[in-house]
Every structure is written in structure tokens, then in C-alpha cells.
Length: 113
Image (cartoon, rainbow, N blue to C red; front, side):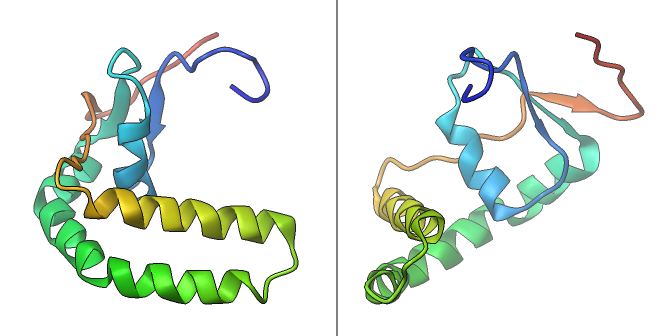
């Protein structure tokens, strides 16, 4: 959106990483998330355990990151750290939910446009 001034037509999760897993929820439900079957399988296998782990360390990580921000001088790094704090705070909310991919590609797909 920063470059095109438009919402994305779709999101692609190319692989399973926690930033994808936790970031999917930021997109409106009208924007489909596409992934491969392996990523979806890993999501279902690991998502609850990963969320439990992050909830377990969230308070400690928020404190640690806040201490590090005071020493940081790079604006981009400070922004990243503040985003991490925001994410950890969201994870601690009782209504926090993950969003799995909506569509699965098993073989290949060509996207034109």
C-alpha cells in the first residue's frame, strides 16, 4: 500500500514463519491469503504451540525490548522494536486469534497483473 496507495489484491505466505503467522490477522478478511499445502500443514501442526510459547515470554520480552529501545539510535530499528512490543501486547489479549491461509496451492499458479 505504501507504494501503490491501494490495498493488496491478495497475500502470499511463501513459508511458515511466526511473522507471517501473526501478521496475517492484520489484513481484512476480504483480502485472501494464499499459501502452499506444506505451509498450511505446518501452521496447523505448530500454531497453537507457537502462540503458547510467545504468550509465555511476552511480558519478559516487552520489558527487555523497552530497555533496549533506550539504547538504540537507529530510527528503523526503534520502529521495528516498537512494532514487536505492539505484537507482544496483542498476543496477550484474550481475544487474539491467528488467521490461517484461505487458499492452498498444491502444484503451481501463475499470477498475472
